Image (cartoon, rainbow, N blue to C red):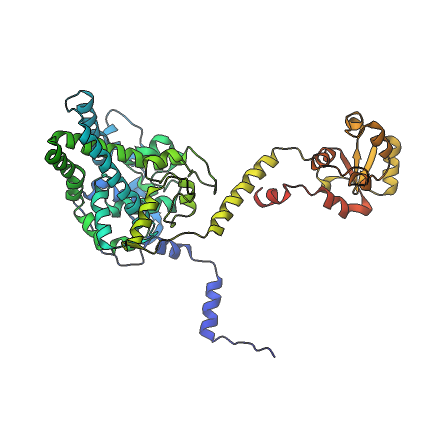
Length: 487
């Protein structure tokens, strides 16, 4: 006996509403976090970081940018001239990314500050400490929430991550989430389509166009007291961790304060910045796309080597909350190893991974797409559905005009130009002329190969009316499934 459940009128009405199309304005409000009352967290850099120009949206419509009238003549849309070139630049980032490293390299190249072996070794170590704090902390922990970390580990990541001089966790994480939300669009902060230089560092040193402001929900970041503390005091933390600490360490242990400042400070910062920038540039230009090619991210082992495993960017964009970037045992991803090790020590937990089935689905679908593109470049013969349909009288009439016709599985083939090329010899093929050679072709005389079937496909001229189904089945090509899915 079946029963029917009657929904209350209020619930029935709610279900009808949910059946309607999702309201995009409401969805964008949720995606930007503008539905929440968030604590305002600021630091001394203020507008110099460029956050306002990149992220402040119209409170009434998160899909629109602030006051269109304000952005019509923005400097980013004006041509460069001798009188306005300085207005095109974000001077804070010019100082941090270009001028300060230039001083360090000048002191090195002129020999003003000799490089001691111990200072070099410490610089390499500190490069690793600061870099992996960005990859394991800024990126995988805070930007993507791929795992959870205890407060001592978060503090370490916040302090040594600031030593890479790439902005605060709040600023870095917000920009990165926008990048994932709007990859390869004008709202992408480091849009790879704008060229290699722009995606590498141009986006940092040029004024962003307010017309393409975007925002992502970072309420979880603001809820973290470590993130709030670091953002409020970022200037001090950055100066201490990036320059003062390495200067004091090299001075105290190696009696080389200036060398510590130049090599473990200025030049080290330059190196880690450039390595990180390669994720936004080279990892969108060079490498393979084993999981998807609708967007620009690529897997690039060279970038992975200098960024502690972050170069497997095609995987990362497809499976962003996976704490791993490299999933094969031989791929270089020390960040993954660090996260796993800290989980064994009780400092990290909740490590997220996508199922192997989902990962394999992405890989297989991408292989199918590549095969489809290759298949589309080949000639597979006339489509059976496009061929004329002959009855017995049509066939006999055409046979009188051309006696080089052979029927195989309901398809009429004109073998005129193939008689002398037939691998089984001319007599055998001539014996089949004017006949239905299906049984002979499919094993009665020879069990022909797939290649033979493909050669035959280019000789199709018609379909026998009574055998249309057999013709359709016989003509099914190995690539047909792939073509239908992705063409």
